[in-house]
Length: 513
Ligand code: NDP
Ligand code: BG6
Image (cartoon, protein in one colour):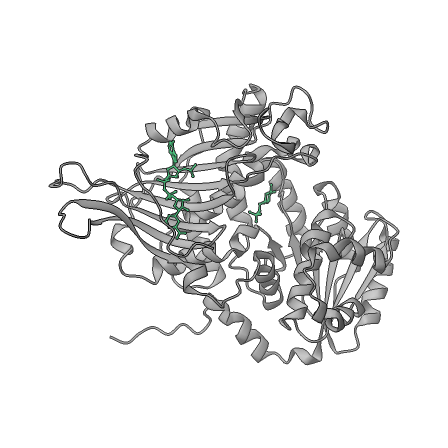
């Protein structure tokens, strides 16, 4: 049978090659404008990412970087603030100077047209080619989104090339505020111009989910309610929110991580095979999954808030409420486990457990499929369930927990694993940071790993009633100790919906670092 050859594959970064080959970018000026250049995100993530891309010569040759913010800073101030995060090596000195030469900074007001007229004059002064493309990165608090986007639209659009706007989360606080923001943005820009970042979509193993699922024959037949007992999506961090309490308290862990990062991973696990790997075919399938999920009920949720561990050292002693930037009586959850169901033919009845938390026992993000028991046991209950784990971070790995005959004179089954650990299998491969991939995607015009407005709407539809109920009822989170696995009630909830933990699996790392 003839194979269908798809010409515009977006998998494996092919689109980047296609775009870079098709266009002679040497003739095109690109200007990357960082709105909020004085802020934390810009300094810790955006500038360092631009530097790494520049250093690896992945950006078009004629690319300039313009910082814009209210603070009266010099380029030197920006450089000093960013340097600790840029991982510059001694031998990079010359390249770093070349990068700095491509940068400029302008102070101005987010609300006044005059500042944006000046910005546009500056952008024009950088462009000496027939085509100029503008990329705007909104590393800004949501409170100034409206003014900034309106001013960009009115004063800073390139009329000699394309314009793209990268928007950072939070995209609103609930369905209504998100819809307002979406309506505002769509009145100013077309959907093709808007790149909503969820940086988890830029992570290696999150992107791998599609290849694993749709590039292998072995998983297809078991990827459904017949064989999967439950799916667990986990995000854990071993540190608290100390110092960031002001922001975090307003949002809480459900808005910060669950409604976006974990839900995005869920859609990639649960979606049907898209017609192609084009951005919209993929996102159409993700939206279909979301449409099959009912709003989460509070009875399917466990909330937690960390308390200090008096036996720990340093920050570990500090509970969430000990942070002076957090209100004394805050009910904000720093941990949540929620059970969602995808009501479609493939997944009806299979619990998708989303769990995330701060100040836990380890750093980990993973997708875990636990399979059902083997029917018709002949090994006297010695077999444990199979699990397929895709570990997103740290130490990217895919492992399948399985039973195998205990080697030697025995005939009894033993737990072991098929293991694809990236650091052993791909020794010399440097995995790019999520932001590197995503920013490159914006240059290339690929929206596959960005959130479309209808995805966002569905994500808020699923979580808004829960969030409103938690706030209205002032639902009290369960205290858990800094450095623990979270409240035991979360394990009980997982057990109740069918997750089985035996505690028998022991991992022996064959290549300890
Ligand atoms: P485990 O059996 O230890 O854990 C399986 C699941 O059970 C996890 O989701 C875990 O949650 C949960 N769990 C742990 N304790 C309890 C409890 N008391 N009650 C209820 N649920 C619980 O197996 P893992 O798959 O996690 O593997 C164990 C270790 O081996 C891990 O550190 C893993 O990274 C490592 N390993 C590494 C591989 C590699 O690098 N390639 C391959 C295979 C294993 P929680 O996440 O909260 O702990
Ligand atoms: C952000 C959250 O989106 O993701 C943070 O706002 C969280 O609270 C961060 O710490 C985690 O990202 P990563 O890439 O370090 O897992």
